[in-house]
Length: 340
Image (cartoon, rainbow, N blue to C red; front, top):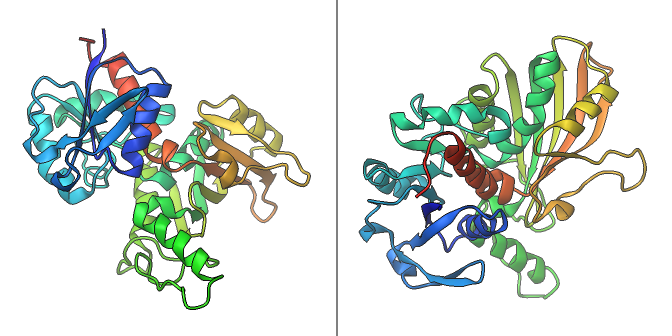
């Protein structure tokens, strides 16, 4: 006995990962439908050893389906998620549309699994921003021990966070650097991304921060604790997959770096690789395809009374999107829904 699952946006990067992870984690699926826009109608995608053809999202009837994993933009989600929810299908949404709605739970299962219980208000659960998801997995166990006052985070985010066109742009610009006359002008990004870094993710706000930076602040407060102060600088880097973060944490109480390391070693979803030697840390290339959030470079911050620095790396298409959505579905099944 299992669930009837719908994957919306199955032809995209995150949709593909959702299908892979449902299969890898042996999620109890009785039936599955894969949906996409009309222009992708009939495109074939893989689910384990099965080949599935995409159906038209606009024409799909969600009645009788249990869970819909949405991996499409906010505009399309705004049109179709309420329709699915009204039909009795619980929506787990990867867009930013519902993250700040007080009636919609924003969930990272290792951090606030109990929040899933609030899904029934709108039949929708929100998946957080990719950069937030990996950070709060590391913050929560430390917050439980010493209470976090303030977080200063700088992110180094891969182009896959923007989508397939951004991956292609990095690839083509990189090739073009070595072939005279084949240079590729920026299109997805405002400046060249190959061999460069861009301190600009999402739109600029009146405050001077970008929307991505604001998301990290608002989502950390909603998921972990509204009293935590967060300031972020989000940077796009020429990496295909895997987000990295340099995180400075100030606590109310003193926390020794060795105790912090031990706490994180025991934390769900976290893998600590922290040797003070060449290569004794994890980089984005090494985290691709893995479920874990990797923590390295744990050390005391001597410039403040109660401070810790750490390095946090995760596959943004997995923990930052598809994996977290499937984990929410698992918790939903365990706590709220009946199989079959």
